Image (cartoon, rainbow, N blue to C red; front, side, top):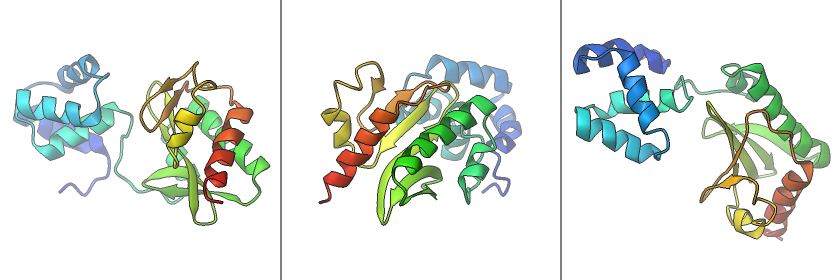
Length: 183
């Protein structure tokens, strides 16, 4: 097990073991960037004989998670990203905490989440070309289908641009639907 939390610390071993420079592996990942995490792992393991640890390091790095370091707060989480992504994520949480004074921004599952009491509301995951919003109550994605039409919606997440002009009304609806489902 690597003690260095940076996923790039695996790169020398990957280059040596699989006899290709990292530029080759990044090109491979670019070709399958539209696939889900398990499919990307399987691709590397089945086609190139990658170990799980090497596949995981390359896939997660390619998806924007450059470290396995566990974050203590949102500032630590955001430090790895450029200013545009930082501003967008901070705006998302500011929009929610301004409206919901009891909401806290916490780190859970190594990502920032809005949480009220013991109820998680919305998580955020920053990627290279987009930001994912993950409502804790995924049914809101179906309930708000009309409002979400301009966005890419997956089973459990909503994809927004890295420079998203935060839609405060949409965020309030996600929070309200989540809170109201528990009453």
